[in-house]
Image 1 (cartoon, rainbow over the protein chains, first blue to last red):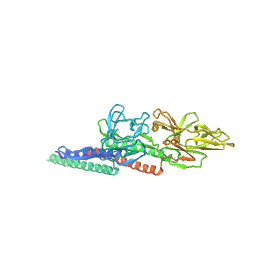
Image 2: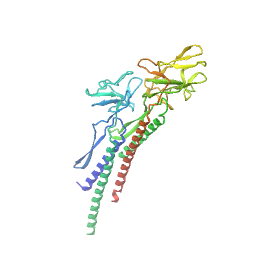
Image 3: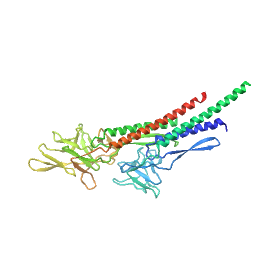
Length: 188
Length: 242
């Protein structure tokens, strides 16, 4: 493979690492957020970066609200938006509506085993009703905080910037060498 | 649009909103019955599943109980437990508050600092002393004898988090919050009224200061992300000149 193509793939990889680090940094206050790991691989086409969501959850934060729920163990809350799309989230800051259903901050309704979960007035939510795995439990009054370390992400931002610079220098150096050989050829 | 630049900028915008909310809490930390708010954030995801940064979804009132403190006011009331006082403003609108710093006005009504009238109770002109029991019953002594004047009822809502916060510690009902439901204080598992006490705001200044510091640092970190993305673009643009 061509030297310039190698160096260019390193530039693109540094760019992707910066994208991932800024995405993590942006979510430094998002409850339930799991950091995205950037992993570099060497392939026949140069360096590529694979994104993988980390399995590590954030620390629990005490809030004291009845419907701030944190999952201890595996599993996620299943929520359905107004268009009917179901997604999973670990962010458990819910509001109990007048009809007893729970909604998250985006207005999505929390699903139980059979359709929307309904909680009677003064009731509590348990892991079984949410359809979580048997070993998981739900803790009321707590939220799972973001699993992002701002300092580590800052270092990633800086190191991505520097690798981008180094790769750019390599591209420029190879380009300059080729320029010279082209010039030499012209003189002769 | 440049993804790194956009993600970092979205983080800055979200932290800016967060700072607004915290500043509002801090400004009202000394207001009786005030309930602090918290901003919620969510990950911003493109239709393809790619993350694009974050978004601030709006603030949510936290109805945690504030500390009850003994006060010197002549007609101070605090609610220990859920519920609100029903007050009526100058235009006859019903509003709900946990600020119980009332005083007797010339027309016999009980009014708070914003001149909102406590619904359902009037004190006769010749009443000498007035006391309120834990169940909301208002008793007055007169030159001759004593008698019960009525009962202060509290309002509860099916979904109190949908109440609309107005200035200070006053809330208005919305269609989502449901209508006010009358509850009587003093039942074993219900709210209790404390006469001669006031409920402090549930914002603690130290917490709010810590939140400000955290939000500021998060803002700065995202600003560094914007700088780094910008620097990369600059380098890429200069490539050709060598």
